[in-house]
Length: 88
Image 1 (cartoon, rainbow, N blue to C red):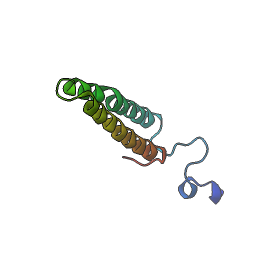
Image 2 (image 1 turned 180 degrees about the vertical axis):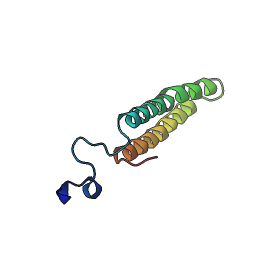
Image 3 (image 1 turned 90 degrees about the horizontal axis):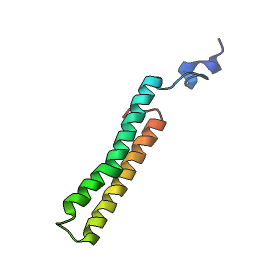
């Protein structure tokens, strides 16, 4: 067996997965999608609903924008970690 093609030294060979296979990929993909919907749709909706009668529109919009930026950075970090093949 050629040492250069050994999966233990150079990572997985063609056709082999670096992670846990399709099952783990589907679960992680579903978790990322759920987190994205929560971060970009559900939580901003709750923020707007809660602050609609408690804050002026400029303050409310600023807080929603701040939340969207935080959610984007957090989900980007998670996505990069998953792309590198590291567990969270």
